[in-house]
Amino acid sequence: MSTPARITHLIGGTPWEGTAERSGAVFNPATGEQTGAVDFASAALVDEVVTGAHAAWQEWGTASLAKRTQVLFAFRELLHARKDEIAALITAEHGKVLSDALGEITRGLEVVEFACGIPHLLKGGYSENVSTKVDVYSIRQSLGVVAVISPFNFPAMVPMWFVPIAIACGNAVVIKPSEKDPSAVNAVAALWREAGLPEGVMNVVHGDKEAVDALLTHPLVKSVSFVGSTPIAKYVYETGTANGKRVQALGGAKNHMLVLPDADLDLAADAAVNAGFGSAGERCMAISALVAVEPVADELISKITDRMGKLVTGDGTRGCDMGPLVTRAHCDKVTSYVQAGVDAGATLVVDGRGGEVDADGEGFFLSPTLFDQVTPDMSIYTDEIFGPVLSVLRVKSYDEGLALINSNAYGNGTAIFTNDGGAARRFQNEVEVGMIGINVPIPVPMAYFSFGGWKNSLFGDTHAHGMEGVHFFTRGKVVTSRWLDPSHGGLNLGFPQNV
Image (cartoon, rainbow, N blue to C red; front, side, top):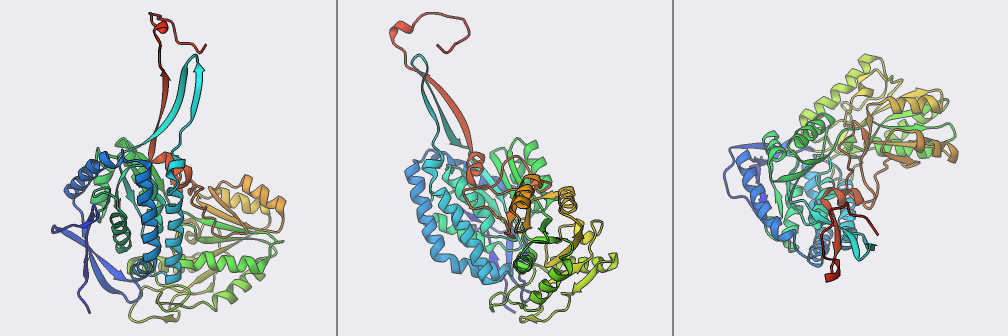
């Protein structure tokens, strides 16, 4: 077994040269082998990095839009050229198949391309002569140092939901990636320096709760962007806002797919398998609850089962359909839900435990798993499992299905499969969920729209990327201006009026 490689902080584009008191193990999920040891930042180191970022922001925040755009375009070209290398890092540490890793980089590139239009996105409004020789205009300015805390399931894409827009708006960034798969963020951060971003504007600190708390409480950190589980999202939101920061904390999900009797069941079955088992179900937009309006459940389950039988689980570098879960602990947790579903009385249609796997070594594998006759009181329905476990719930009508979805604590994403335009339109208006797909199983918006859910899937008022992202990373000012000539002199203590 080879010696685990050291993975350390990237401060202003330069690897940290200090000695960490604590570190965490990084594994190849397909083999179970420890491949890396990631340094954990102390609160003192976070303070040092944030202080340096604040100094760098004072210059970058006043850089011209032309300069910022040049850096963004250069970064876009570098990321596009190196995407295969970064995808390989994702597969090696996360376990998702290479094609999926490339897909997340491509979706991240869409946000970079959106941010390249920052000169237009930051344009304010101007009204001339609102009162006699008085003009009013609006401007947006950067915040300062902003923090990003990103999850393990999209180690490249989720950081790019926030970082390109934050930098384009003139901020300095300190990102704390997941300690489970940290190398992709380091690789992407190095490209910013290569693209011409000034030293100190983009920084990576690795770590655990100590580093997170240091960012949440540091007086120079002005905003926090977070994606992760709902309990941690709530903690981040409450702690960050209590310390005077604006926070966007995207939490967990339990995404439903409602299938009406008139739907194309082949299309629905394809979608359920793709959205339920892609990336081993480790997506916040994964479909984990399929709501079948009778009488389609039996036929739909038969079609899904047939498709599941053709899937190959294995090492993500070998051209399989689905890879391992990210860690042994997470795999064990997801596997325990399978037994919990059986114990609760659900029908285990396809058991992914002990399935055939195309991989070397003792990886963290659970093959695709399918339950039928699931009820809303079962833990396999109430909990966000975050693994390749798909549950089928049977309902008698559209109204019953809608009520089931709306009563769920989460409101991240949902989908409806139907050939009835009226039903689809009614669903998009009545469902209490932030992102909706109509015959689309994973309704992730394009970069120029904004990403975010409702209810316990989002803490804070602002969604990710799109114009909401631009507004989150800037502050607005309104300027009222009048250039006087001598005839406007004199005292007048009355309330100003527009005349």
